[in-house]
Image (cartoon, rainbow, N blue to C red; front, side):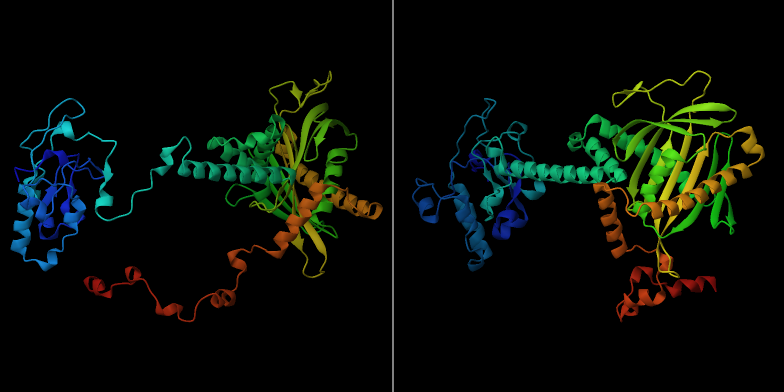
Length: 489
């Protein structure tokens, strides 16, 4: 062991059992071979005939020793043969990278149980001609680092291509969602791009991104009225005479009223087109005056609304926005007119006018509509369910007489149903728009693949999905151990 040449020292340890060293593999290790790469082996283990010639020919590689058929030799013969080869090695020294000398008496074969370690100055020595240990063990060369051979290796190039392809797909999805009115989906994609710093959202300009964030915020706030979750203080009622479902809630700083009804003989696109016209002309009072400040985008416009309210003339700036939320939990088209506190005096290049003298401008107002497809199984006609929600700051009169809000939202929906019937008689077709075509296709796809609640699925349908032998299988971890019940008897 002491005659082992230190030239085969590298760094780390490689158990000889990994290299197939026969019966000695259980208790012999090579030190200080690296687990990843071996140092260049200048002194080779000679063949048997080379050992007899005083070790003059030493060109045999370690792999030849590994390939020795130890099964054909007795254990004693194998052990003596290995000792003969080891004793034939010469002692040599060569400088380390730090200018130090390897010790002549350093051993490269030590007992595995000795727990000895290689010299600290030889552990971090990495030779550029190092050989992977897995190659000596008979494995194929490690190709996992081939990508580093050039400025842009294969692995990095593949990663770059996948990233570019993913960005292109998300960019196209963002454009489709934006042009189809699915602004909630567009908001999620924009947030994904910003969080992951992928920057594919930059295909939209700042004005488009402002619309997405503002409309998404207003949509999220309006869900409080449109969904009316249980246990949140809503008082509900039913008006059979006008076929209205009513809901009301009053808090210290917010007054909310909701009404819902079914409109027959129209689809969601016809109802949306009618609501856009109705909201901009007839939503509030007969003395309403509306001015279009900006209608650059079809799904988002800016209105200046003059109306009489609370004993004063109101001069309000309202946004009128709508979106396709059929894929969202709401499952409807959404339309809303609402106030928004602008930080800048301009909106898309249009200067926001100050309120007229003697008038007031509301800081908070929100009216929202949800237009959901409705199946009329009795009549077999197309129909929609329209929900109207109103949220504003409570007045003293509304707090004392909450029925005023009930009448206001109920009157609004009743008048809209009449407006929709008259409009259908006077106008057979809705406004031509590519975004309306996208909504029709989207609604048709959802109708072809309807989503049902768990309560709507019968036990017979559930049973048809189970295999015949479903009761024959069980998880032992969930089977009750009745032997443990004896302790409670």
